[in-house]
Length: 249
Image 1 (cartoon, rainbow, N blue to C red):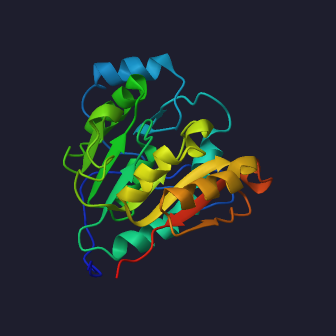
Image 2: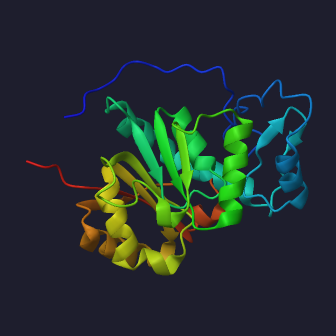
């Protein structure tokens, strides 16, 4: 049985900060105070292409340009809803790990590391997203053994035969049609030792909950959004569900 670990990790690296959603909130951690003499050319090219999911703090005076105006607040909302249950699950493990089944640029992977995970596996079937995630991992000097990024077909931890389940599993940004098909959720359930966070449309939440129970989760519950959340969560257009597996005898 996993035991509670009270040891806190320290690192000289600067993690990317939480997304900022309003002037009245506490300021996020500062962007990295120093980078190399020039920005890595591949990353510079990607920044110039624009259309980023998140505003990554590349340098004190440089963030990646967002694809749309709602990205910052949506990211902040998901972080606020996910952070406490993720921290609670990770701190209960002697070797805390996490799995992001649609990691995109890797924003939540970085957050999970900052919340206490010693290792995170990020999976994405989209080569362009995975490329950006790899460039950002290298830019922030995160070792591959801490953040393992891989394509869907070769992903360790996406199958029950590949290692132990993870303390936190994240299913965010997945096409809606896959969430009501028990196949993906079955993979998530097999991979979950603690808690699994599933984002979906509000209108699909009941169907996703039924699919989750059929896939092997013991329970699913809605997470209440913070008061200053992205309006889509406040109005019920988007939901975050927390799923848990039953304890073995």
